[in-house]
Length: 334
Image (cartoon, rainbow, N blue to C red):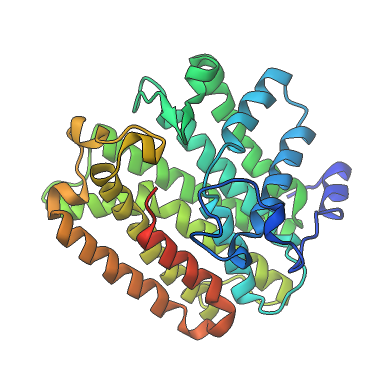
C-alpha cells in the first residue's frame, strides 16, 4: 500500500483524547447518564468531532457534505464506535492515548450510517422516520440519499487509509470490507430471501442477523482490539487470546442486539423509538418474537448477555466498559 504525503501528514496529527474527556463534551444521544456512566459514553464527543473533521477534510460538494453530516451526526447511540474505543482500551489496558483507534471507530460509524440511509430508501424499507427525524431521502431527495450513502461508505475506508499507518491500515480495511459485505448479504437474505434450503426459521434468522447486524458489531470490536495490539507491538492475529476474547464477546453481543431490536419493534411505540414500528411484521419478515415468541426471545437475550460478559473474563477490569455496554444493549428501550 502506498501512502501520499497528505496521508502521511494526517497519520501524524490525530486528535488525542484521554481519560480527561468528560460527560459535558458528549452531545445529546440515546446513551446518557440515565443509561450508562459518563466514563463509558465520554468518547462520543471525540468520535463526533473526528467524524466531522473527516467529512470537512474530504472536500465534498457542499450539499453532499451537509447531507452526510445530517445522517452521520444526528441523534443516535454511537454504539459501534464506543465498542471500538472500549475494545481498544480493554486490550491496551491503561493506555492514555486512544488516538490510534479513532479512525477505525469513525470508519465503522460511517459504514453504519451509510447502511441506515440506504435501508430507508423506497426500494428497500421505504421509511420516513429515523432517530425521530425525517429520513435523509425525505429531508433531501432520493438521489442525494443514494449519493450520500455512497460517500459515507468510501469515506470509511479513506479515514483508515489516510490516517493510520500502512501496516495496520491494510488489515483494518480488509476486516471492514468483509464485514460490510456480510452486512449487505444479511440485508439481501432479510429483504429478498435466498438462505440455504433446509434451515429452520430460527436458523434462518441467525444467518440473517449474524450478517445483517452482527457483522458490523463484530468488526467494531475487532478493529479496536487490532489497533491496541498494533500499539502494543503484538501480532494482529486471531491466535492472540485478547483478540479471540473480544471476538467471542462481539459475536454474542451482536446477535443479542438484533433480538432486542426485534423485541422493541413489537413492544414500543413509533414515538418512543423515533422510527416506524411493526414494519418487519407488516412486511412478512422473520423476527425473533414471531418465530420464538416474546418470552423465549427475552430468554435468549439473557443467555447471549451472559455469554458476552463471560467472554471478557480473560481481560479483567479493563473490559468493564464493554460489560456495561453489553448490559445496556440487553435492556435498552430504543
